[in-house]
Image (cartoon, rainbow, N blue to C red; front, top):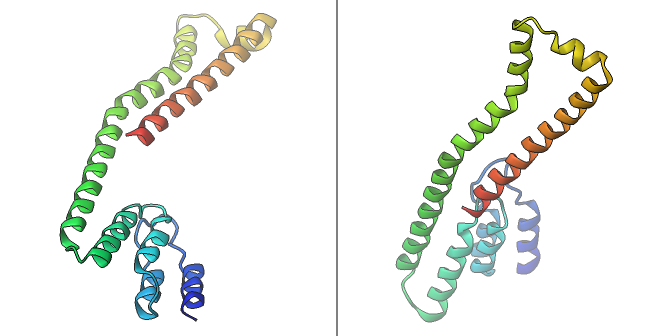
Length: 162
């Protein structure tokens, strides 16, 4: 009966979209019905933004099996989570310059068209009404899209690694 109630609580425990908060239904079911509290924390850790619950589960398991204090382990988990958050913010701040540079470089072709029109040339006519212009436009658009995708992947991989 306990396992069934715990599984029902796990099935009904879905975190709100975008919320990085711990959903206590699984934990509450484990405490009330004699389930495994560390397993409940591991289940909670599967939710986005609740990765620290796995550390809590480990601390709980060590404390319950060996009689060691829980507070010191929880302090270390909290310290580690704070350090991860600070690193994530540092990486995000460091990438802001690279992202703004990529956005500026992506907008440069538009400035080139405006500059050409301002100097009296007709860059749109050349690009849209000649075969060489159409090839250059297609190639330029392809390279532009590839550059934006590439820059985005580099930034995301740096954020995930940091």
